[in-house]
Image 1 (cartoon, rainbow, N blue to C red):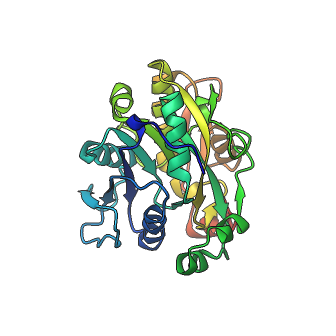
Image 2: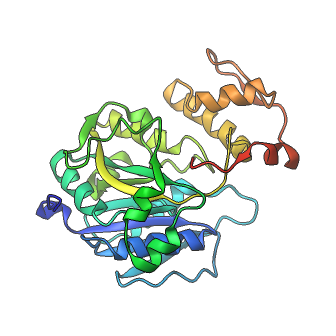
Length: 301
């Protein structure tokens, strides 16, 4: 059995933000309900989905809405902050709408968080397109999810081996908000997510850098979550405009560029003009439908 979290970390809220991901959301909530350590509540923030009907849950589930109007970038940071503001318990577990928690995820993650404090990130495994999620949903065996998933090649070394305690890290630039635990007090010390970042790109790294500046530790846990498959673009041209805006905002704030691999790819393909050593980043053109279709791949991530 996994180590049990200490008393301060047993009362927790799971926070999810979602927009139009109802099928994945239903699986994620099902996984939460099958956990060996149940949260006190689920807080679900719908973005620009006013008529949404939440999935069934035996864990108390409360809904908040955040609507920014048609055509506006998704307010990811503001939605996470709204969910946190609605949470009633002292520890927050942010969980991406695509991520099914393994049955022991919360036990392992919160036991680690009780030891290390600060930000503690779970370890994502990525499900293949033909993964047996329906079989898992019907029969409940998590083994099919392990069988049909892989660790992220660039982040698999961050987490310890299963059964070992969380690994403290200085790799704040590699923090993701896919699944992590943080005490309410630390979340408020950080100031939440910076809502000036609009749409995709940069807001996770900004959150982690602010935690580092505040002296809040970071650790990576062996707690497992399974990222459900969806088609991806390499590079993510569907988010080109928001990445450009957010990258410039990040550089103004921190003095260095985030997402350099993506910016390199955009510049090489002629979508942006970018000076990695300076402050110049300009959008030159946007991709058309054929260009977006050409870079969409059916890969785990």
